[in-house]
Image: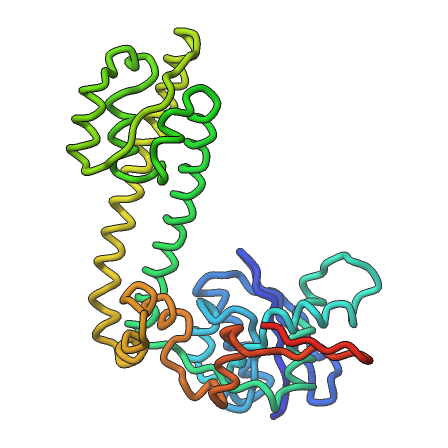
Length: 310
């Protein structure tokens, strides 16, 4: 090992720090997050050392990591919490500096290199599955936000649908809001309500009616229909991604292992497989994997007190 390299990941530029085996700085520079900039980074690193003998710790296992691995460099991935905890050792205050942050991963690699396993790129099917799972999770988060806003809107002027439906994002709730906005609630007779509920196989009864002014009813009714329409699109896209995810995970060896777990469906198996990847050798043991997944017990002991948590 001739040099150590630390990289501070940025949005458009990456700060790079090169130090010698004794920990003394040799060079600091920044590269743009584009193909020409990454090619310049590889060329600069080759001037200092052999790619196969140059460890480069990076916090994020994507983008820049793949480029460096393809160029022959040995990447390691220190945990972001370790990097965050080490920042206090190098700062007198809370200000941030990209060149300084780039030195921290290099120093971690110098001190704790024996604990860091070399990074092995994930296969293309795993990368695709990871992207699909993360995209689906983002859509679900947006769905929760819009459903919460819709519930708050209905609660402010018409708690009837709010009390009637357990899930305001359910098909029956969206259909009800689209068919019977507050300005049309006057035509919501008991028979029509019963017919709508029977059509959607739902059993309940409306316990209140809206009581806003005409102008307010028109405005809030429009907001309710927009939110319900947005939820309709999100639910459809989430279902589409779910169907897309179920097929590839069943064809992956790691996915088949996770699917065989009791109670693990295909979506849950895809989430676990996408996050863990196919680099089993990166985990040194079953305990290492359990600790990384936050399912390993931790004993807290100080003086006479002792407790076990997760």
